[in-house]
Image (cartoon, rainbow, N blue to C red; front, top):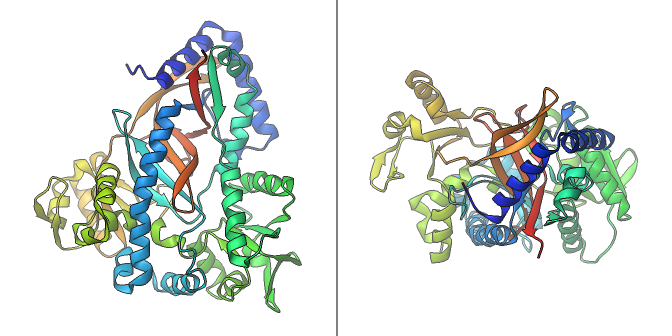
Length: 460
């Protein structure tokens, strides 16, 4: 069993809940009431279903942040190469409409080539000394305001107050880390510091509407006008984008570009305003480049070795699992020697995952070790004709988390995903922590739980 400070604190947390059934029940009831009051739900169900935060010792979190910053330098190098060279950009497999929006946006933001917001989806390594990245969410990194609401609820729980007698506990906020870089980007865009009028745009039926309301409250608490709306409710005339008749300066875009273009069209008023430079869009079309799962193939592929310096190569080796676009070619395999990609993938499904380049919520993912050869080969055949990657399987960490099941305390092992938020493509601040008992760890897919991330250390 691990003897890290975080593991010791988790064990102490569980011991206190186990020893005092009243403490566990009171904490569970208070958590449920507080989250209901704050409307912290996803699709009508509670977003947090466990009674302990994700715990990091300060040195563990510092190591995570340092390693992430080193890796982000490689992502920036890949993006810079793609911005400058259309041939390099072709490796990311942008759709034609994505390419057109990317070019328009890149021209307007040449002095700020990195998107303000992002999120690395990672799994900690078995020894706890590193992590593997399975996605860079560079388009709509969700969850920061949910995180802060759940963290605020946890801070007031009876079990947290009991733990605080012997342990120093501090939540890692994420909402402020979303608003601050957005305002910094607005200052760069406008050339002067001023208070922008913000619009949060997504479809009215999406299950994350409750997070939009939490975000709106945080914007307004800082004196920033903020409205929530359907992108189709926007109008662009006279060089001004309006939502419900009110002018908009900054679009905090939570709607996905693919859905926006499919449902509202490439010439929807929001995109007209973006192309005209009338609004700042966060994140804009440039974010699609790294958001594509093909970005991991770009970093991993030996064809691009000259793009990166020695430190970047070390970070890529440490944190990016072997990844390739599914296509007929010869390439270096994960074990070193060159392989014929498609036949090799067909014969090694137990160690591989197939992922659509631009899907979300777990859609289209095929875990090779969970299917038979016929299903796997059919998925490979489909993948050749659509933008898809194949990726080496990574070890998913597991931790025990407490919850109330059937009216009694239960300690259940769950898979753990750590997704630190990326600021300006350079460093991380705060983290989304997700838990699941299923193989596919994704809250959007309908299972699992989000829990806040806390730093923990022993009190002297």
